[in-house]
Image (cartoon, rainbow, N blue to C red; front, side):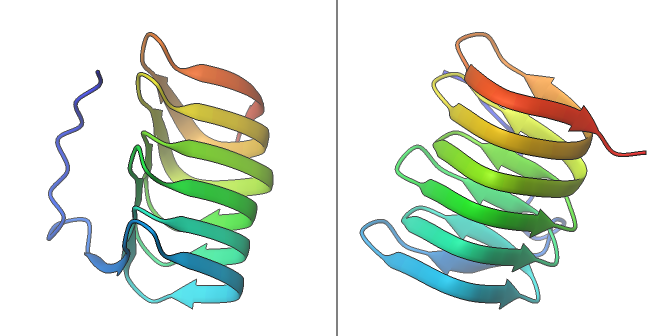
Length: 117
């Protein structure tokens, strides 16, 4: 299993969608986000996003910081202005743009990965 060292304070991760919770529609977070539940629709995060094993992310996504994916990310389009870290056991599909990518062995990636210029 992948291990990410994430300083939640440094990354300004202050918002949380708990396991078992569902978020839908057009949502904007002014800080980083810890996603343990599911989110669908349009999601904007002004900071880092951490998607845990129990998390599911679908729809259109824009993240101003790094993204750490350990759960399932199935997006129409994602724009990540930082680095996308995809951990062991994570699943990523859809059209994804990021400044850079870091993939761990055992990640399931069927996405179109493109670097932001």
